[in-house]
Image 1 (cartoon, rainbow, N blue to C red):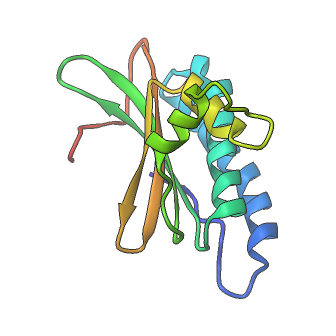
Image 2 (image 1 turned 180 degrees about the vertical axis):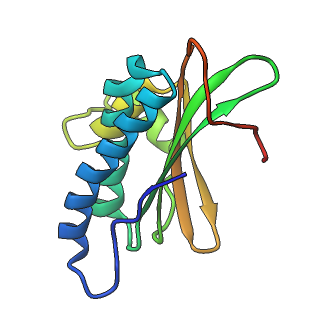
Length: 153
């Protein structure tokens, strides 16, 4: 489900992204309530804010934010958040290695993705022919989920 497509031709992309972040958070809050996953709201809002901030700061327009609820046959349910931009991808293994290195520090950046790494059950970067998508999955245990999307469907 598209949450927000913050960049449009002719608009200041950074200003558009700032307004889109607020819009994306409102849509995410609404969808999580509809899916009875309100317990994920704070984490989801923080994750999407961090991912969109990185896309605006380091990526290339256009930006796109998407979210959906995935229900696997195994019973696993999770919310998948994605932020796409037209820039080059990130090397997640290199980033994680920097976090683990004794001389590594979060003082010079990388805190946003460290937060995503802490909150998400999994996350990654998927390159495409038109940029890349950084995604994060948040586990959910809804009382009764509606609107599930089957993986690959």
